[in-house]
Image (spheres, rainbow, N blue to C red):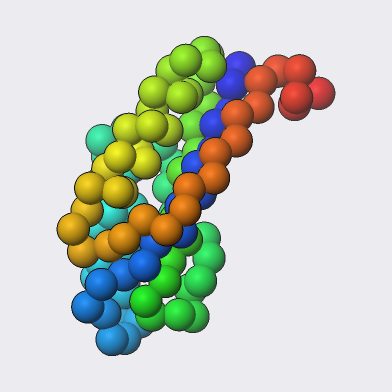
Length: 99
């Protein structure tokens, strides 16, 4: 078993309120969940209207599959024109790390 996580810090474009922020972040989180069958959520910077931290988690049987899915998730976020990807942090844990 392999657990993979990806946390991305993003800067939102033309957003002036928390309501506008939700309108940008929610569709991204929903698309990550739908396209890649991962757990995804906004996990940080929730009080700031131009910044967001999004996190993705996957549990799978192989290291290669976890890397492939997390790479695809990072590319999806980076490709969104309404946001700028500032940083991405990834962590992979296998059975030995989880004991």
